[in-house]
Image (tube, rainbow, N blue to C red; front, side, top):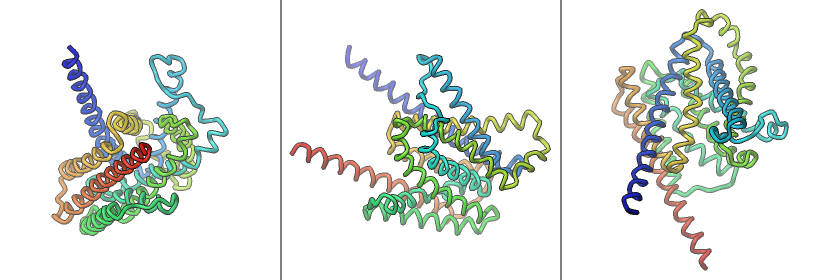
Length: 333
């Protein structure tokens, strides 16, 4: 009786993992396409406003879940915390500034470049991770991992060169992509430091970041002249406009949820592999959806970036396994 039950539990576990990974793929790809439509298809030149509405939606959802968690703790599990606590604000605000820069540059990149090129345009995150980890934390990287980073840079360079030959190329979009990669790397590094101030609660940190970011975006929108742009928008008071804006906001919240869930039911390594494979599928879907014809070298750049990212993930996994074995052996001695 025990063996069939064990097989059944294992089968259930695999089904759950498959469902979560599939949900991550669908929601992640859908979010990119929805954001592209919002940023480029509404004839509203206010990308920061669109991004602000998304973080405001996420803040509202998190606040609602927090209230429900307090009232119905058995039904809703959400960590307890107050974003308006002075000490919390002081410790989390620096990370929230990086969070604001990260999502702003990512959406600005997506506004100006095509979905097909979006992954290559933002592919330098791993490279910046290595550079900033050494510059800020003093942690060195192995030669094999550095070679993987060189491969990613080569793929990025080829991709930009080939994209520049097309009508869809945007230099400003590519620059925002590089800045997005840089801000994401900084955000990842400082997240580890900030999590200790929120009892390692990822959802609580996400809640705080969205609340603070919804305030930080206001002066940025004013400086960028988007307030008047929004007020003069011809469809501002039409229901469909706020409907699609709300869909974008829900997608923004959902991608954070399924990303955390995928890491939870698998591992950070599996999440990286899944994200890399998803990016490949996203590129293929985008070229088909927008009926784009790309050169052989353009596709080669995507393959090089994907291989470089995959090899880097594998190298880091092997290094972590080696470190773990050495620590276990030293404990035995």
